[in-house]
Length: 66
Image (cartoon, rainbow, N blue to C red; front, top):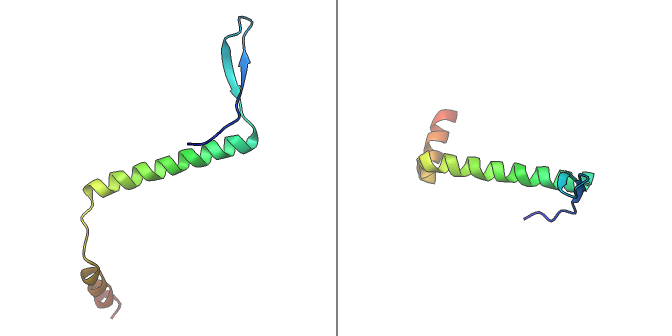
C-alpha cells in the first residue's frame, strides 16, 4: 500500500471536506492506481487465455519468418 501524508480541509463544523496531497504523494497515488489497473487487466486476460507450449510457438515463428 502507498504511504501518503494527506492533510484534510474542514468546514466550520470541523467535518472533513477535502484532502490535500503533495505533488510527490499525488504522483505516488497515480502510479499505484496505474499498477492496480495493469494487474486487473493481466488477471482478466489470463482468465480467457489459452497458453501454447514454447516449442509450438517457436516452431510457428520460424515457419513464418522462413
